[in-house]
Image 1 (tube, rainbow, N blue to C red):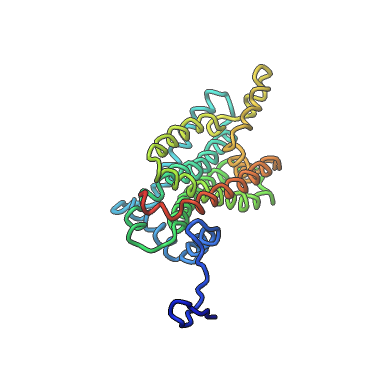
Image 2 (image 1 turned 90 degrees about the vertical axis):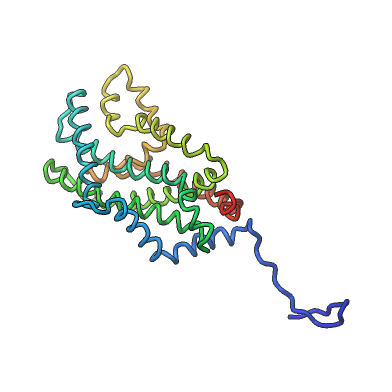
Length: 288
């Protein structure tokens, strides 16, 4: 299509307006282009793990060994302190630590996901979401390595696992989805305000002690003096994420309100994350 140019008398083509830097099409396009490059971020995520354990005899097996030692130590310690049977409390602690490591890894590394990839962002024409996908994939590999600990515990201390175990798959997918928006939101904010990463690190450490990872809600609920206050733990959003995955892995009954809370957080989180990506995606390269 052409129009007449009154100044020159010649026809010139009409060029459609390109979407601005603050457009939903570019924000969603960033996620789409990043997903299409999954061969790249998949390889980079695996290389991150190999590089961390380079020249090590056991290699990535150290991931599971270190996690197993921590879970065993904390499980034995707190089972003695609380007077709980080791066959039920140790799996409770171990699985809680597996899930916590994934959640805290996405949160802590998410706050520095763009800062740590400053060179790639400045010199490699790639979507920002590529670095987010790489982060979530790397944390997923860590989780899968550590899942060996859960398998060993189920052999040593058998639990009544049933069809509800299949709920662990959608539960972990929800954790991955939330890891994505957390990395986008905190990563963009941290590139603009460099005080964000240490603040997040302090908050994550505090949340660990407020989340029933190495302690159990059932213990507090059984005590009439603190039973009512024990219910306040449900105000902690991380508690719901831990429970939707820990319960199927341990063969415990499913509580659907945990899933409802996680679903609401996922939707609201992605709305906020996409809004942040839409407005500030183009500025990240200058902020880093």
